[in-house]
Length: 184
Image (cartoon, rainbow, N blue to C red):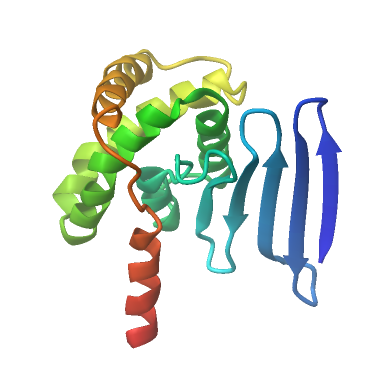
């Protein structure tokens, strides 16, 4: 196991990496402390799935990018894009937007697991939005106009919904998947 702590004056990051005997990364955890978020964290599990969220004063407010994580686990979204989305959400998306997103996205991921058409409908939207987020995070040199539009409409609708609903338990999506894997 190795770890690295960095600081930008406002946040302190701790990165923990577990490796196997030949040096391949088997487990990675990234934790951040700062003014706005007591403890932000993301974790790459040995099976390649990534979990993220908040602990502390904003616990339960979000971080679980459920649609992006669904496509990441299928190999249809690059790891750096997922991590950029997580970081962007943690830095720029208000908790009400995340609550609204989880309200509809958690059931939608369950639908995608049963219905490939649902995946085909949302995939281009996720891709365009992800390209715009990557531009905002300086990972791309150009933005995506469709992604800007999706962000404007989608985040506005999620904000409205999020002001009327409580926190949703996005972790159940991955717990159910783990239980199904253990049963087989």
